Length: 350
Ligand code: GDP
Ligand code: ZN
Image (cartoon, rainbow, N blue to C red):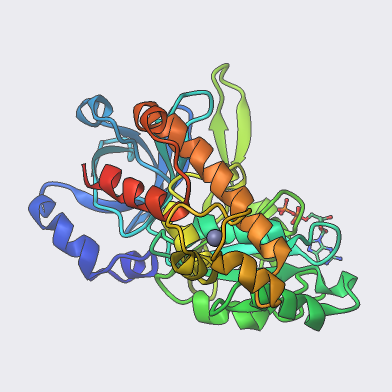
């Protein structure tokens, strides 16, 4: 196996799916998606690429992080013929459209959920990100950034650990170079990390400090825009000097709740277990007798706030589900997450 390909994340899984194309095409990984083309890493370096006419006919387009099968032309650019199966993916509802799945990034091992320890710090938002990240086949890690601006870092860490059981929570300061070493287990050769977090929380600063050199000088690609002017675009899949790959994609910042249903099941498993003990299977936990959720709130084992964030997330997911499948939503008004999760599974199987 070629060493650079390995560094890029090539492994037996993709090798197996590439078997039919050996001798015909060569493997490459998509590093940037433009309006009218792609950049891909090959075993010989990064080159421009476009998709074949055949691939254009198909519904799915390459996303950042995808492994693809390419051919090269005489002038050194590439044509993408095949998208290899994805090990994991993040997708969203296409802006404006009713519900078309758009894959934003693919083949991620770890997802860094970044929130800063100053004004941006918000447990509800972290919960939402966790629900988005949970079921994607990538391990979520919560990164609390700008620790230099916070006086009670340990309290904040504990608050997050409470809402994110079993998930690694680390505090860092990218500007003070503090705590960054805690990220090294995730930044190994061939391992891909994607960043999720609002604008301004310090994602680019973190990448700069990980890269060991300034991204401004090296991470930008010059390309011509539609009028032929040179513009610079940030490369989205970045190979780090000390191993590992990191994806900072603007689309991740706008991620909507898509397919978060199952992630939510994990995140709020304590409430869902309580719900299963309610006397009535369609209990709304308002006024019904024999309500295990109400009981847990009165004995203090469940907080009102946690129940409220569960409900809020549930409403948001239902809104997305309704858009995805209006007919189903019309026929049925989902009362609880368990029923909804079953429906989601059925839809997925179809
Ligand atoms: P992004 O939008 O998430 O990529 O955020 P940036 O990396 O552009 O950072 C936004 C602002 O936060 C910039 O002014 C950074 O200098 C600042 N910043 C980033 N990391 C830190 C940090 O660890 N500590 C402090 N005090 N400021 C930071
Ligand atoms: Zn109940």
